[in-house]
Length: 127
Image (cartoon, rainbow, N blue to C red; front, side, top):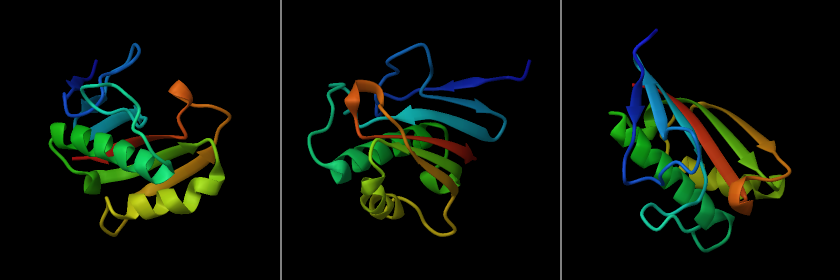
């Protein structure tokens, strides 16, 4: 079996189920989907989709840092939204966390997300 390293940081929300914040194998890091939970309190961030997206990307950033990289090491981002009408606002927030060339990305609308949030984002990094 390939050596798997668990990535965990108190600067991102703890896992709320049977999963890790991230797993690193070789130079690849798979970051679990992040929702707008505030680390420490585990409360949902107050605010609109912009505030929620910022918290999600802050959580991803903290995990990327703990894995020895940055969000600019992302090669693939998967975004789930409960309303694709939020697409432009999320794009604006995402652009503030990455430098070009941007990672590959998928964005889909889903019926529901954990804790009834509006956004969840997962990432794959190469560090």
